[in-house]
Amino acid sequence: MQALEDFAPLAYQESYDNSGLQVGSPDDEVKGVLLTLDVTEAVVAEAMEKGCNMIVAHHPLIFNGIKRITGQHYTERIIKTAIRHDIHIYAAHTNMDNVRNGVNHVIAGQLGLINTSVLAPQTCNLLRLYTYVPEPDAGKVRDALFAAGAGHIGDYKECSFNTAGTGTFRPGANTNPVIGQANGPREWVNEVKVEVLLPSHIKNRVLHALKNNHPYEEVAYELIALQNINQETGAGMVGYLPAPMEAAAFLKHLKERMNCSCIRHTALPAGPIHKVAVCGGSGSFLLKDAIRSGADVFITGDFKYHQFFDADNRIMIADIGHYESEQFTVRIFADILKKKFLNFAPLLSTISTNPINYYH
Image (cartoon, rainbow, N blue to C red):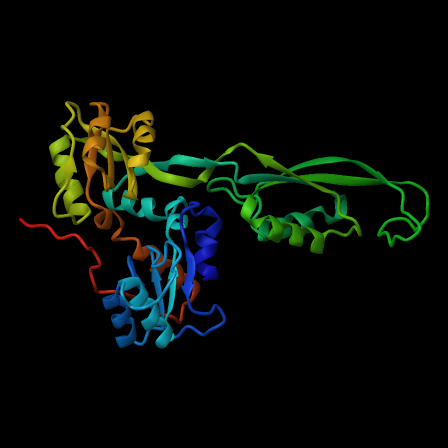
C-alpha cells in the first residue's frame, strides 16, 4: 500500500472518491496480488484460483455507505466472499488519475504524444517551508528535507534557496542550548535561511525530518500556504503528436492504439490533428479546459448526447468509452510493484470487466 501511495498519495483523490484499502487489514501478509480495473465476482474467483490474497483495482468496490450485507447486490456478495477467504481489496482511483505519471500519462504514451503536461493542474496543495540553520549544519538539514520529499519542482529534485544571515537569541534559564549557555547573554550566530517547496500532504513527514536533524533545541521555521499551480497534479493531460495527422487518419490511429471497438465523435475538423487532450474515464467536465488549451481533439469516455453540442465546432470530441480509456491502468500498478519488490511478481487479471458490449 505504501509503495502505491508514494506514487499516488491518497491526499490527491477527489472528495467524492473512496480510494485506499476497502477490505482487509493493513497488518496482514501479502502472498499474491491480482491487478484489475474493476472488482467483480469473477475477478475475486480468479484471485482465489491463483492464490492471490490481495486485489488492487483502479475503481473502488465501495463508493458509498453500505447499510446491510445480505448478498442481494454484487457488491455485498463480493465483500462477503472476500472476508470469508481473507482477500484484501485496495483501490487507487482519482489519486491515480491526478498524478502526472498516472492514468492519463499511460493514454498519452499509447498515442505517442510528446511534450505532455497536466491539462487542469491543481492549486493550493503546495507549501513553502522556511527554516534557519547554523552554517555548519545547513547541509545536513537540507539533505534530510530532500530525503523526506521536499524540494521537488517538476522533474527537478533537491531544489532549495539559501540565504546567509545573522541570527540572534538569548537562552533562558531552563534551556539546553547548542550554542551559548542557559541564562547567558545574547548570542549572534551565522545562519542560513533554507527555503523549500513541499506538497501539503507530506508536511508532517518533512517537519519530523527537520526537527530530528536540526541542532537547535527550539527549531524556528515557517510554513506558508501557496496559491501556485502544482505542475505534478491535476486532471487530464495534453500533448502533441510527433507530426500532424488528418482527422480520419487520427481516428484510425486512436482506434488501433486504444484497442476500442468504436469511437463516438463530433464532426471532423477541417484542419489536421496536432494537439491532443486526454482524460481517462468520465472526462466531460474537462471539455472547457481542453478547448482553452487549444487542443484539436479531446479523448475521453462517458459523454452524454447533449454534451457533444458543447464542442461548438471548437474542438473534436472523441468518446472511446470509459473502460477503453482506462484499460491500460493496471500497467502502472505492475510497474510500481515490480520496481519496489524485485522478488515479487504481481499478476494481471485475464478477465475483461467491461460491462458494456457492442453489437457489430
